[in-house]
Image (cartoon, rainbow, N blue to C red; front, side, top):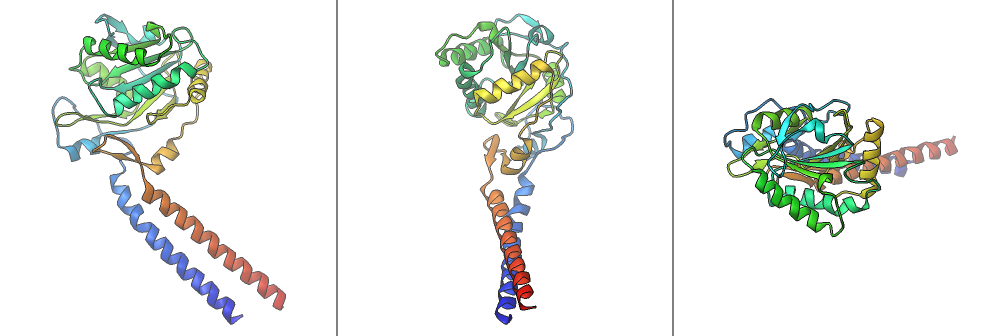
Length: 286
């Protein structure tokens, strides 16, 4: 019995030590985590990187609607009303075309996945890339449209993927409605790496995180949008396992935080095992 008690006490100490070790990285990581609502900010001028990081993030607004009365310019330079494009389930990618980092990977990743989507582009769904940099031009949008369509190595209708630019006010109205918050830095933008799927009436039905897409996930999201069903996103996974990195302008895998979770779970299971073993042993003695 004395040996068992000693073992339980040792297990308890190990559990507390593991809990303390896990708590330290968790507290440090929480400081860098930037999800949640953010105040309205003017993105017309440059700001310090630390300030910009604090103003960038994503607040999911599933079930809410984006305004469809906004006017942008398409890749040919013609004015186009957003509602005239969102006549089918639509994937919207907030990007800026001159970005050589995550925006490039985001659109490239989607271009790789679209040929596997079990829906017809242009008639059953549409993709819209929207630059949140009001200084970018339709000519630049056209350049990148040609590049991404060519990268697909399969026929894809011109009307199936539209590339838009616009003024700061309309851009901000759309991104704010989607809970997407970006901020201009000294030479680039700090922004979340995410896209969202809307139904024909502008209802946000799903958010997609990261630069890798699975055709089956896209197909499911588009079917949900067709039926007007608000889907379930992986926000909890993204919010917990990924941290917004203001230097890389993306969500990065947070190894420390995940490791801390594993340590706590393992220690708790070990302590529970010791306690249950002790009770069984005591029951046999009596």
